[in-house]
Image (cartoon, rainbow, N blue to C red; front, side, top):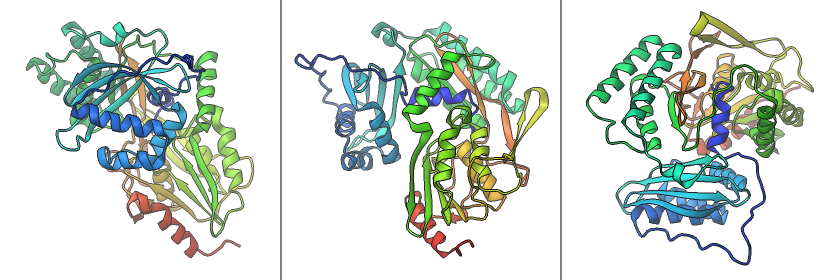
Length: 447
């Protein structure tokens, strides 16, 4: 599951910054840069044109041809948030790589993108990342290179944070040994791009730990100091505005045939801000005969929101999960709430839809309900991340997310780290909803 501080990273990655009016003069538009006639350029143009069209069929066709691991629903949601992009600059062009600068159509937010493709026809996507840039970031900042001193400082800082906080100290030492060996052999000497260096360190750490929560991140702009203690009023206001813009992750709610409720949400937000949205959703479904939670694109979030939503499914106080933290050797327990606004759904059949992209807190929700025999899990084995993470600033441009604790389920006495949550009914993610609907129809209606 994600620790609260990690939610900031999620929303930065999906460019959820405050919207502003686009200021481009309508009668004198700036010409778009030419997209290079290269394999990377061709694939990038296919993405750019389909994404900007906003047409689901075109985006779906692009994904099937060039990037089949991408989610159509998630891409459509991202498109609605940004309004599409204006291409400002091609920053670097190689046959299999393109770096570019874009601006959201609905705001002044700019983002740098890096697009790598595999050799072949078509040239399929190997990796594609977009990173929002803080206001005031210059092109010179984006073009700056990292040197040997920076690489050494980042490696030292990352290893120090792992040794201090990583949930398994012995694994932290093994990660240090592996990266130090690569450093000694000159594996990092030729890397001058910050994103590439962060990506390689992440891969090297994960090769040892197999911990998908652990990652190193780079920002061309200066990385702010990591806050300690409660967030500031400005940070809370910004978070609230971000959550309003994406409806706290609640994506879709409807009544299906047979009086079955359907709720799709894509992360578990902080209930101090998003509790009213969750309560409204659950109350909308209060009179359903069964409920389907769609977590196929849910990447996790706050364990307190997991407890709030889960509380509607139980009529007595129920132990959901524990979190053991390495520092201080302390354990926090998570239980259902003694009171929730509105009616509970206890006794109503519940189904949880999962995919390989279901991760972290969404896995906890699924794992808790499966072990308590409160829901039927339908779909694919989930991603396998059970360690909450805290962000640590390394220097002005690099940070590392360090998993600092582990989940301990009160029933199984273990968790889903590295294995994922196994579904009760195994079907492809695309078939999970129709399968759950059939199962719900077979359940006897509650009195």
